[in-house]
Length: 336
Image (cartoon, rainbow, N blue to C red; front, side, top):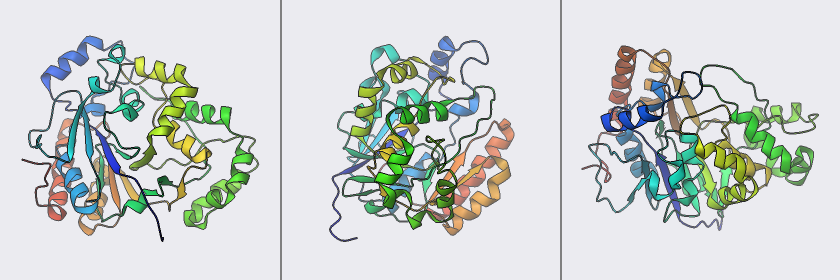
């Protein structure tokens, strides 16, 4: 990997304190009848483990230039607001006033490229994503191109309360501008790269498809270029504007995967292996998650909150945090 050069690389993190009474009062003003919007409680629950994401960033990715921490206005009680590497960003700093207040993460993430001072190259983290091993900047960008896994996949849909069709909306937009066979032919070295392992078989199996049926979605920190967001806003302002006008998630929203898939279809990426992280969910995966943390088996651990009871939630949270404390016991510069 000789002569690989990148510009500055930033991190963007979205966070909400679902227990903040002022935030809850504001949210209640805009809630609608059940089933129209996705405002389920677990969407906003705070796991009190964000400090381990920041400790991981400091320990495992010290080359990050700046962390842009996006919030409604509240902050974790432990956060060091004077940290030179930290940029605290309010929604109003980069979202238009007609979108606010906003409780829809898909709307917020559609605008993050407008964060003042954000580097052209950035990594988008959800607040449920944690680093477990040292990583190089070339794991995320090479010569200013985002690293990603390009795998054709078949989307499926589970209709549930507060569900979403964003996967289908996203890929529909991609198919509007790209022909799958032409994309694969033009960038065949990237789409048929052996680094994808057995996941490559999905692309091969779906070759007869006349259009993209979907792309592999791994719930991981995502490498982005601001210009990808700017291009989509130029081409598809209508659906992005509509998403941003929805104060809660709806079936009609697009999300960050649209920008990821645009980068892949455009060939503006560098192939990266699949399976860098472990996704676990709820109490059922607690022990698996604890082992992954304490043995640092993966680059990332992603813990997806489920609609657990409050008792199960507290137990799961406390047990996970004990495991994080074993590998990241020391405060970072982001903490008081």
